[in-house]
Image (cartoon, rainbow, N blue to C red; front, side, top):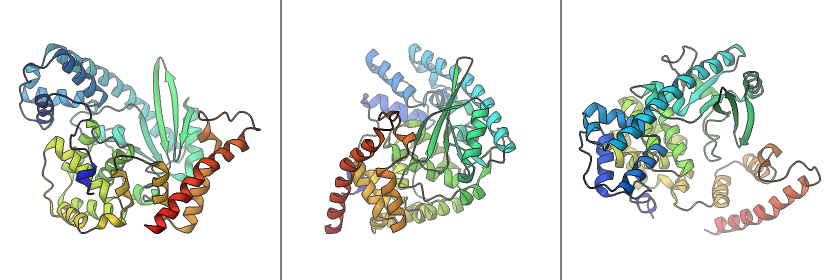
Length: 390
């Protein structure tokens, strides 16, 4: 079964009248489109909620205002757009000040850091920073400086709230406003991609965010596009419009040489499958052509079977089986990495178990790990036998 058959045909998971979905896509593409007639009040409310949840309202309003089509929208929708716009102006101002504090303190402590996702992309590829919504700040730091970064964040009033795989979440409240920060020490929190991006290599290619600070840095455009693709694939949310918009705008920034570099890096890092599928999903919304020779080469490589050597291909399956996904990861890893992956799966740090089990009692901890062995190990071994016979 090829990717086209495995991925859902309809772009949006929420059902709208076809005329309303077509209007949305046309408007996002920057075309003048009159709001469709006979949209029920129920559909209008669902549409407003969906675009807000998808993080796209500020950018959509910007497009509509540019073309003059905003005036054709129902008053209730215009008001919803305006409320979100004003909120994002305030949030962006607060987030920008917070970013500057963090960047300066990291610099003073000798912690090299890269700003990721919306907090960086808002300054680099959007017409105005407040057009890119984001609910938190994502920062990638030098793995050797995790403890230093932790001390900096604690000195700024942040407290740890969660930890998963290769990131720790921090939060602090300031006059009723909560700032949430995800501290990453690997570029991807996915087990599939976490080892594909070396920090030194990524940092060396990084670029400054001049509109924010001369000390602020982020991924170069090619790495940012690959990261946007694998981030969306990891979450299995293929219709989140703000993520598709990131990909669309990043794709539009690539030069001819960068297109070639994008394909080369994607294949070398064995994530060509999800990168190609993310571009196709973005194409459904934004209507651009995947006609660059490098992208056509990637498509040709797909048809000739490069997916067989691409572990990211599994992320295109509609149904997610975490144990099978783990086995696929084991197959592509060295024996040393397999041992470390298995140990981590069965005996994760207690900090990652908080919230799922009662870890306050030391007596219960051995039984927690025994339970994980009994539940997870048989499934891994069964799939291992299946994999050998396949």
